[in-house]
Length: 216
Image (cartoon, rainbow, N blue to C red):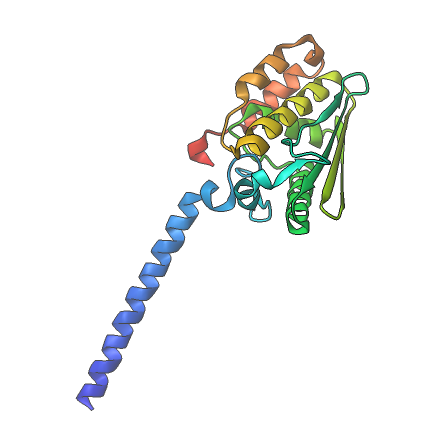
């Protein structure tokens, strides 16, 4: 019997140590935040970002091209109509589905007044524009092709979604870069006369929502 008691005590000690290690691991994962859930183009201070697929897209960014070519996806812009259209071809249906899911997920986040990439003024401006219905988005998928159509109601909103599309085309699809900060671009748009009507509201929104990278 004394050997049995000793064996039970050792098991209890092992269980306690294992439990303690599990708590430590959970704490470390929580502290990593952005790197785990995908901070960057579609990650950050926006609630639960686990459904954004951003890490999959980052790893597979080179597997997307303009439909019918091997070129990096690029938006087709019409400043007069204030519209932007993408036709993006993936190498697989899985890739197309992951991209569609990402776009739909981000659309839902913005509609729900969430702020992915809250350190970035450009993304905050886009979140403001989406929540206040200054532009619309339509995402459709057919096989390995994904078509994204954005239509702005104001020139200010158009400039914001246009700048975002440039970032996605050049940095994300071109290089897999998801952590650049486009706040300087946003400041130029915000200072333009096209944003006179919403400048005060945008500045207030940004001051209330912006966070440093370390706080996300």
